[in-house]
Amino acid sequence: MSRGFGREKRLLTPRQFKAVFDSPSGKAPGKNVLLLVRDSELDHPRLGLVIGKKSVKLAVERNRIKRQIRESFRLNQDHLSGWDIVVVARKGLGDLENAELAKQFDKLWKRLARNRPNRDANAPTGTSDQPHA
Image (cartoon, rainbow, N blue to C red; front, side, top):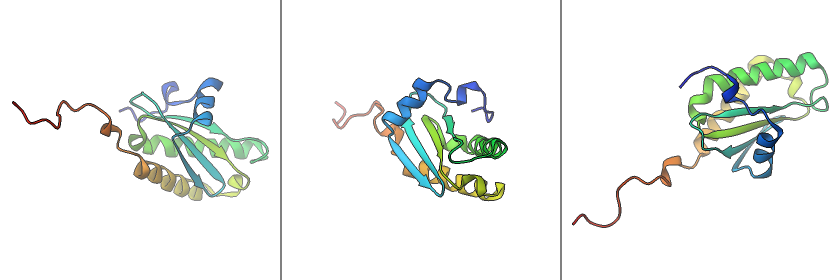
C-alpha cells in the first residue's frame, strides 16, 4: 500500500463526513480530541479533520495541528485500512507541542487498531462446518 496521503486517502465531501458522524462504528476519545470511525468498503483508510476556530483559535495553530495529524495518520495507515476516520478537535488541542501530539495520535491509532473487530470474520472463507463428502 502506498504510504502517501493523496486525495483517495481523504474525506472530501460533506456527504462523506456526514456518513461517519451519523453512524460511527467506533469512537476513540483522547485528550482534547475525539476520533469517530466508520467501516468502509475500501482497501485503504480515509481521514477527515474537523478543527474549528472554537477549539483552536489561531489559523497557524490549526494548520500545524492538521499537518501533525496527517503525518501521524500517514505513518500509521497500514493498521487502519478499511476505515473512514474523522478527527474532531476539542479545546486545548492547540496547546500541545508537536511531540505530544504525535505521541497522543500514535496511541489513538493503536487503540483503534486493537479494538477493531476482525474484518475477515464475516468474509466467506470457502470452508463450511459440514464435513467433506
